[in-house]
Length: 328
Image 1 (cartoon, rainbow, N blue to C red):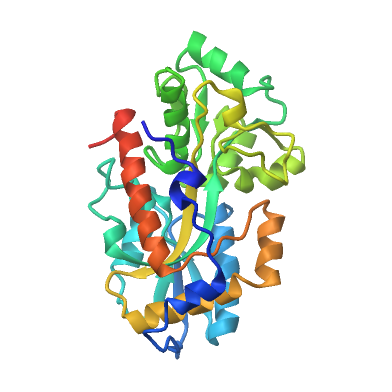
Image 2 (image 1 turned 90 degrees about the vertical axis):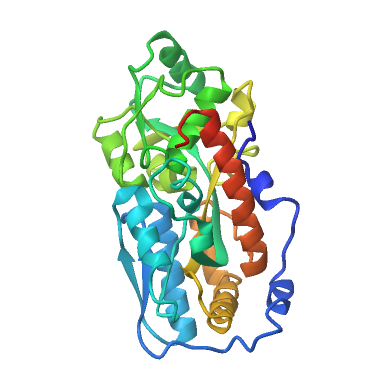
């Protein structure tokens, strides 16, 4: 089974803003909206997708001269929002956050929608999962949790997203990689990271496997406790939390992604204008400071590279979904 890692998805490509803008040379890329733009977010308020999208929408509004109105279209385990984005009129007045679920929903039988039904514009974030418990949890290491799951399968519960969503794959894939039943920790579906963390703090579940960056503030405030970071290197902002690569025999790691994308069939002039604007604002100090506040790095990747990135991710995630028995 292929591990889903940042390195796997990004490869060794190091991209510069200048190189990306050079790929737009065939078009003028000077389209600007003449009225407000709808920015669709398929997940609820409070999670990383919402935070990144609202910040980017605000900066795009300043850059392109029109309001960008963020609309959270939740439901259907990500299908509702992604469908609204993919099937909107491709006239530049609807864009949004296509997330890694565009590469998982179809594999688990939720929709026929795939990455081919959107127009990827720019990469916004690459997000390794975490393994997080409540601050007063009796568990102080990943090993302690897995030992209980082995001894008493089904006793512990976890949440983070829908059944078959990326944070569920983070957990089920990890358990499978460790030779355990992927259901030995029961998955409780949620509408996203924000609701899942609220459920964790309320005592409704034992673990969340949302992005560590999404849980960062609550960990720093002492509300939650991080036991593992599903990455090969520790998170700079939370260096005391060990990686799963350090702790697990399998070396399991997993990362999600967030993009700004348009509907299927978006005009190339409009798409490259958005690409140009997005890359420009994401190369600013303001964006870098925002990312640093979330313990995340700035990533710069435009349309051409992003299309290859998303295609590779789809194949790798499909392999994992099949391995843990969720493919339909």
